[in-house]
Image 1 (tube, one colour):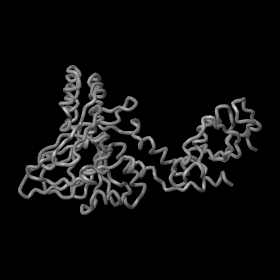
Image 2 (cartoon, helix red, strand yellow):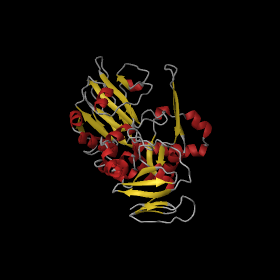
Image 3 (tube, helix red, strand yellow):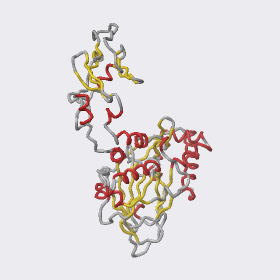
Image 4 (cartoon, one colour):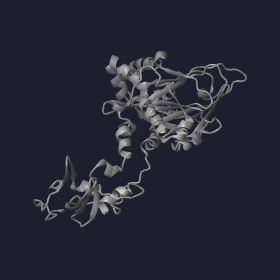
Length: 406
């Protein structure tokens, strides 16, 4: 039996018949949820309103006066309805109807909030444990779809994940492409940066000296979500990579000196790089060291070599700067605590993937000899590509829509 309204006007709606879903002056009341009239039209997934392959709305403008006039048919997952402009369409009434059949719902329930970087879903680590040092075999990820989802879940939860037995003859672009995690995020270095040891280099990343903890490309707006480091060749003694969960360091500051935490979370700092040796290398990005979302840590931007001190002195008052430096020095003391770092020697074929908004990386110094060989790739990835791989199920929901069309 259909549910029909007498009119599409602003007068009181008169319901002729009633099933589970009902029409009111507000819209469609369906169990515990209510679709406003306008919302129901924007939610329509009929072929006229919704792209089967693009999964996007095809009609992007509707009158604010649109009203549902009739519920033509109900199935467990859909409502077939008519609006006052005589359009007949399909409104999903369940997550399965909107997103598709299982295992899509299972993926959403298990991974959705984590993939959106909800603070409640991550695990902040104060000291590294076996979860942090876990290595995943690259070939296992190639062979099994669930294994790569487990790997991505681990990466998003801890902000760090290691791969082993990658072919060092392949570039990161090739290796990530085989895992359906590309394209890589291109930067001024190209799809990946070749980091080869040099004597007396312009960039100290190519030297044998130690590197302090930092997030990468903090002068980009925004900085890349994901940083990758791959070892191609190394014969050095020392040179271990170091990793630190900066959320832990920031929370330690918040617990001990909440006033200083507040300064670092509210005072904008500029990261800047400018060089005459490279074209288009003048990048400036400005935001606090601690970026919060709904009161929780969301992104940490901390590349000390690129902090713009002249701008800071010129634009921020003296007392604020004094407090900022007090807070930053204490936070960096927490950051460089050796007992809180993960220390890993990456061997040829090993890859470290980091949440570049959360986990910093550094390097121990290594012995420099005439025959020193250290060849690494640094590369960047987009978080959304990893999210898409985690949530992907390749399910065609066309069969589900047939239930409402029959």
